[in-house]
Length: 175
Image (tube, rainbow, N blue to C red):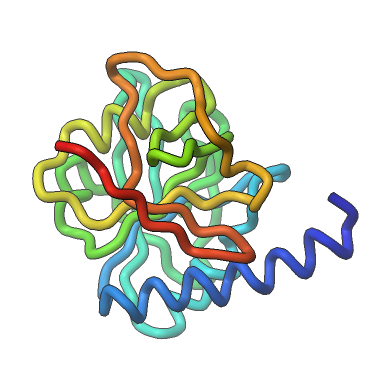
């Protein structure tokens, strides 16, 4: 994508993520802080905190689980054990994810049935697999990353939806 295409996509993605927060009346969300080539989430996280929405961002642990860190505007960023930026703020254990109203997760791609292909470390699959009655979970993607099918393994967890710059998709998941 060209820089202009990325800028346009970022604005549309922010609008769609805001719509989902409104749709679910979310007062507490979990959302990753995007890295360089991922669809951008920083503007969303900043917007949500300005709106008074509690935002938790993931922090990888060396045991393969994730803690969740409260994000607040102006937080200094430090790095978790994987070298990913996280706020230097209060940290909560993995179970706090069951208390959020909406979850945004990264993905390399998502299949038309909701199966998410991650980056191969399994952190989000473990986090989502441990939840019961979890909040709606949306993969944040560019439109071309929604595909017909993805490779899958028994531990892989599907998402309930995908949000892209051009659309919001809900998947009918089988139980």
